[in-house]
Image (tube, rainbow, N blue to C red; front, side, top):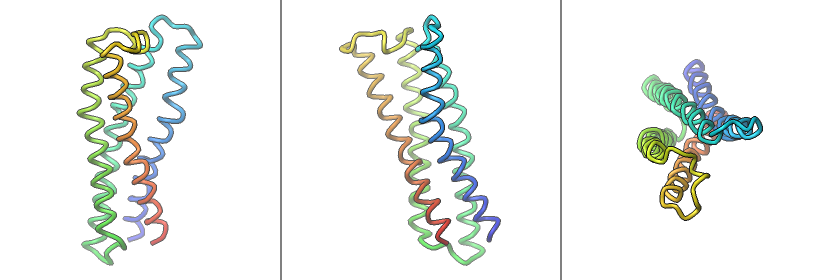
Length: 162
């Protein structure tokens, strides 16, 4: 059981820690470096780089979600059943659903919109419908990533309490 709990905790740390590092370090650094170096089309390039980082992290998220789910199910089958098993499963399903929706559907809409624009959204007027739509999609993506971040913190708490 210790090994299964360790695997679950490790998966959660990678998932939650990765989200925190992406939001707090990678995104700001990517955009700040491009701006500081005054690279032509820097914001567009920064968006493309960070978009690719998010695309790759999506696969990490899926892998860690599978690890945590498998660990939880094996612990239930092998016994003793983890405390708050139903809640943990529900939180994990919600985290995974939010990640998949953001990583597949919202990301595809953002990529399509960026391809159609061909310029950084920030270079468009604030009333431009494409910029408004990009802002809405960006906000949706950010909000969706809060679900696995907060849910993951709750699951880490439960793992540490057990």
